Image (tube, rainbow, N blue to C red):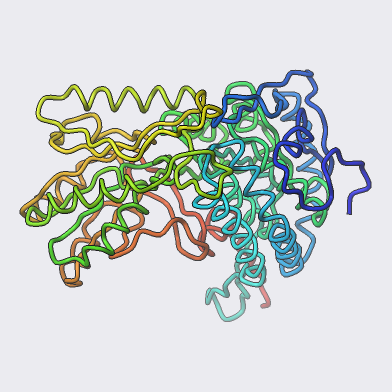
Length: 503
């Protein structure tokens, strides 16, 4: 347990505004909150109102060095802890996070604008589940015996890599942090996380909560901007593994920096996920599935969002109308209001990007923009980053809206007649993260599932990332896997061969 005084309450709190204020100005290094060494901070804004709710420490190379040096020192002792004991401690962290689940849900809703009822509580629950899952895998860090020669005992063992640098995005920051931190810790590594500048608060609180259980220095977190904080973390000589979730452009920069050091890197870089709907599908279930697949409740801010929906022509018009009608019924409003289905876009910059795509689609000849739901009427939300979801029809496959990741509540629906043609169109993308197929003909579904170029293909469902399901893409969607035993073994350990000549 920590003996350093905390600016934050020990017990769960349901006041996210007070908690946000208490978290202002801190990193978490070596088992305690520490202010940034340069004294600089930046604003954390509630995207529903435009009001500043906290100041985050603006980390730089000096903060990174302090965190990494602390983690490197702690790692030597952490690696000596038996693997099952490490897992048990991580499992204890999961129990603590469950106690604080509602607190974390409210805090993440405040800083990201994600609706509490439909999104933020879900994320807070999944986070605890991920730590619980990986906490049970300590005994799976197994090696092998190799039949080399009768007089030689040859075995392999799994060993930790050292200090892991993890860089996380803003859309589901708690979840994506958990997918990196949990397996890294159980495998015997220590971790330094660089949070997203738009969402530094809830992950900082998680770090503090887990440090009530973990030895100091095993889990550290910094806030700051990419060039000043993220880059020094990737480049630090004592960071022996980098795991990154974000844009393709930044991912390539991270990969180049990791290559210069010859260290392993895991990259999850987004997608343009196709959803293929056949006329024989369970119609009502599929429409409901499309709402979930498109992540409308998250304003489409998901790398697995079904932003390309292909519908077999006999049910195309009916499907478009049913989709619009369903989204029209969704309530947009204050993310902390229990009545709200849809919250906000996370930042002004992201809002402008989404608006740009919508305006371009609206100007396209032959295209129709089906604008859905309704803007909030509450005057207190007039400065909020709200935008109505849009369903486009009539766009060609060359359209930028069909080819590029929008990361907003915008999807394109197009008709198809031939399964082979729609498969070719679905695969005609630089991305390959996820895809879904909706049909009652499992022979057709399984055939196409095998031929779709995606790391995760689901038939008649489109669940979000789940513990124990291998997750990761192909092509520009990234390198490596997350969320599974495979991820822990292959991406957070190395295999050492030991040979004993007994002759």
